[in-house]
Length: 327
Image (cartoon, rainbow, N blue to C red; front, side):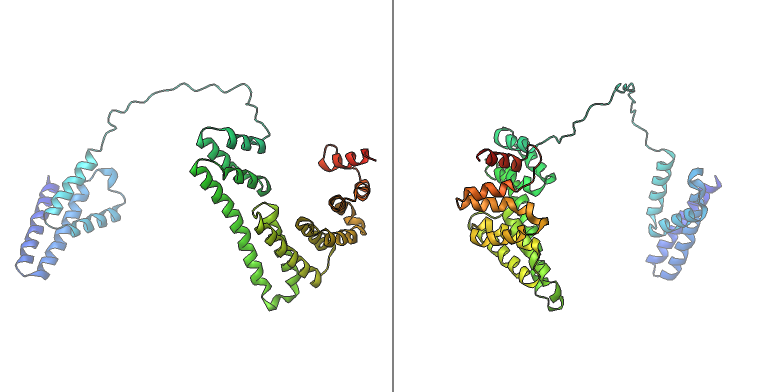
């Protein structure tokens, strides 16, 4: 009871501080308000539930600051709201709990396939035959987890889809792959212009040739653009050979010439690489391909015969057996 009388007295004292303030006695009003806030904080502390009275000092400081910031009628309102909320917390609204029996675990785990849900042929089939756009969108999204060499033909097929969302998603993914390669090309070209890295220019030229080749190899460049990127790849590969000749770069340049249809320039590069034991088995298929395009079928058969036996069922082994059968 004494606590309630003390609280009422503190409210009256705070009201008196307001009367002093409007009467022009600001300093005296501030001092009176501070005393009222101290008394309010002390009495309010003892009115709180016991579990909310700890820790002691922070609770008193909190109450003092609260009452100091809300003078006058604000002290009555905040006190009533606080006490009501602490002594009469919200109930659970009659929420009923529903018990469910614990499900039995299976005797054996389910068998999971080692193959992915979508195969390369499966994605093509979905894009061509699925009537629901969401399934075709899912097929396009699945290409994000595939190698670029396999994903790009699927994305190009999706560009012909009748649904706008499917086409836009496929275009966005293709554009992202192309922009990534173009960004690397710009970085390498910047490094190539740096005179302080003159000793590494042959390496930058080789990497630039590989990036331009990648645009063609992945199918990101088509038509005239493909001819352009292959020409740039040949240009940078030739510059790398002039600065630092290696067999690997010569074989790479030969492949670029072969893709451009410049067989006369590609052949000596492959023949020179064939003189080394390490590169011989790698360049024989390319020499056979050049001989085939030039209608030198006996040379084509001879180059394939020089290949060591390949893995059974591989395309190169089947080609080798076919030409051996024609002899």
